[in-house]
Picture 1 (cartoon, rainbow, N blue to C red):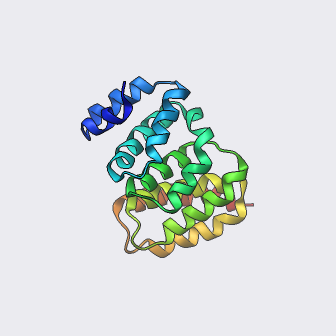
Picture 2: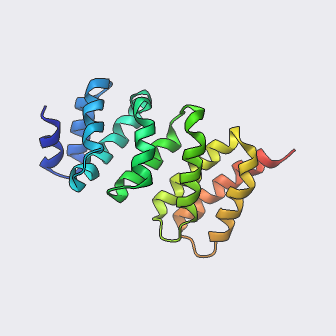
Amino acid sequence: MDLRNAILTEHSKANTLLITNWIGNNQDRFNQLMELFFNEEYRIVQRAAWVMNHSASAHPHLIQPHLERLLIAMESPKHDAVVRNGMKILAETKFHPDFMGRAASLAFDLLAHPKSPVAIKVHSMQLLANICRDEPDLAGELRILIEDQWEESTAGFKSRGKKILKQLDKIQSP
């Protein structure tokens, strides 16, 4: 399969799943996808992000060699899809502790930013809650950020926020 052409064929769930199935559990094919994801072309980056999300969710080990570049790409994204899908992957993936500080800093910034879309905030909350299991000292800061945004937040934010606050209660209780 010519991956670049396949990604550009159409932006649909059917095409995304077709490409995801072709990649399967194959690291070389996933690496090809990631080269497109780190591309300069806006449209390719956007579409590759969706495929990356599906592939990494099905086979989390495939993303491991790309985590550092993913974090760098998320710090100066070419498209919202980079951050949205990247945060979702980070929230679902166990990764090396060396990346924890950088991931936490990015997630706190995104959660605090008033213009971050709700999906990005929700995935950032989840990533931070996961990190709080290993770093319970961050739980108070996460709680404050969630509670400060509560009144103006969406139903999606409140739904995930409620679950995260319950997780934080368990982490913070003696």
